[in-house]
Length: 522
Image 1: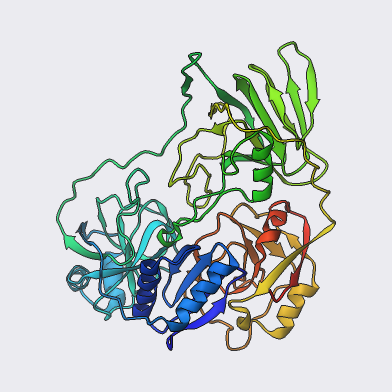
Image 2: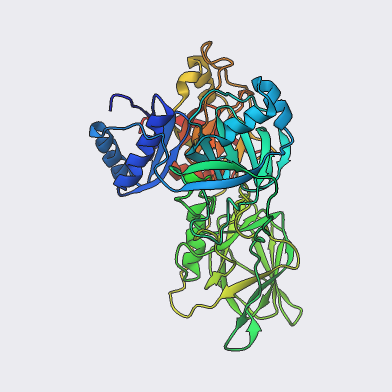
């Protein structure tokens, strides 16, 4: 393809650069229609298309396909046309008109008098970047972003327009509002507007407000055999405990991260120990403090780190059970997770499955997008589905203590050319500390800031797709290593991507831990 420039984005992904938004949409349509095997994510952005695969062979097939494929201009909408009734009474309408040199009436006429093309998703679940047919206006963003933009707000930023699907921060100019539900996890598809659709904004004087769906909440179903609930009551949630499985890949084009367990190997080990499928939901526990009271008797196991597991029996006697091995928690007994000698995250699996409601096919808690079960709180009940087949696993060797300085391997790209050779060398030469603001979204590194090249200094990078494990460098020069709940797109350069085999190790790095990075060519 003459228009394409392909950059590596880790072991299993590429970033395709194109020369126009029309070609971006054309490449996105081409890849989706071809449905190449092993492709997990296709994320279009302003100037790029990001492609994530599940294996090196699948990535090779994508590259071979791109060598001979032809991309067409596809900016005009090719999907469903949505006519969204809009009341133009936005808080920024007057200021936005002044910024463009138009009257309020002329700005509304421009916005509502054309068909917008849904180019790509990102920022938040269901948030779709709408490209105009009339490119007269480039709208400046607000100097100070709002901390919360109401759901249904119709806004313009740069060359794009959008409808905010839920209450989120935002710096676009608010022109009005609509009553349409843009994002609804109970609907199929959850996103009203899909890439390739068209949108027409229809001015109205009044809106018919529709009650928005409430978030799904877990309940305590009854075991029909005995008429009593089976599961666990949370007596204390610990430092931070969430429900996790292997995540919800395949929705990044709608702004939904894959999420899921940070230490996927530990989740699989815990599930294997209790006889579950590898994708069963378990609890991801940060450090200690979690206390659960059993309703019904359960086979359980904890893997990942080596916390101390204490069980308070009905007879008042306390016993200690080992980690990395199955154990039995009787009806009415209390399990307490105490701090271990090393490690940061552990995974508690129970034979059966933690039956909180699934969202887009997964029970994983996504802290960035607020999808799935919220982090545990005292008094919550976790229902468990009983299972009577499967083989309980044997005890496993506990993970070795974390090294004083952990080592993570990475590949350069896609935006390493934004940094000086001296900075790239310094990135590997120094030992980085994990900052206190690190979480499931990413590990914030503290150390000597990296410098951009003179050409890249002060430049802005249009948002583009991100791989799990990306090392993104904001203007501060201090990298962020993105983990499972990272945003699907980002507007800062990525100097490299950590190997997938090392991301489980990264999941166990607590604030204050030290890490070094080693470059590999493959």
